Image (cartoon, rainbow, N blue to C red; front, side, top):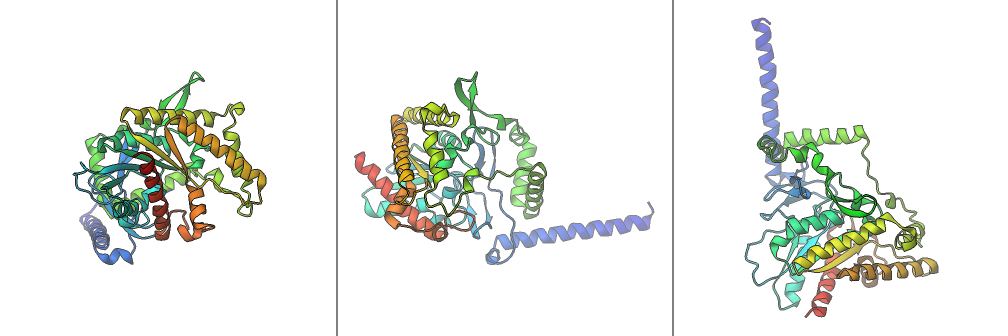
Length: 388
């Protein structure tokens, strides 16, 4: 290569390099000023792989959330998607809250997440100091929530643990999926134990490597590196055909009786069907009970979105009542209080629609968080009255 070609190559290289640096500075300026409200930003990476939970938040990590609603999000010093707290909780009634993306609530400002509104409600109406720690993360099904309680929540020395998940988690086989987080599996067709195939993923195997940690920090901090990483991840998912659409979401919205959904839950609880999902559900509840009993911890389990048939649908109304009584019995056998959250919404607010409470992507909007906070406050007050 002659000198002229080398000079030309160097000019092109320096031009590209300078352009990337300027673009990086531009993107960082947007993220760190009020310009993020109107200019394009790159989705943040708020956490890291974890060999016990599958994924956990990075303390003090922050970024601009862009899906459904644009919000500045910061993970607090405890590694929680929550407001910042001091470490002095000695005289507080402490509650740990486990949930999925609905409770994680990256779509709204942290002070308006329903658990933080509830915390303020309780302190205004009761002669106690309350602290509700939000351990929720997107994708957290029942078992990952339990593992989060064991790995993070127990260290907070809570008085009460509240789980929050969709009823579909008990029907979809999610409890047996250990590809991204712990799951359950049958041993010799009989015994059940936790399984961790996700630990074979290279991200988990390399998660303690110094090079991996430095690389991940660089991606988290650099908008350009995040852009390339997220794009490559999206392309890879398309390439291998990953598309986890929940079969239960394909409902006939004109069916005011919710026949298919009611039947799925109803037949889940029929012992004679020898249903694997039912066995796993019962094992999970006993697993949760054992874990909480060791810490003398009270448990509430909020099951969200169990459909409510129109009162004209006599068969489905009867089936719903029957399977709910069966569910309550199964939960109470394991010292867990079950809450039918959808019924609470219907009972207090009537036929309020999801479009009023949620963004188009299905997560709660600001009004939705106010409604949930009202009912969540009611649930905790009832618990405290019964356990004086």
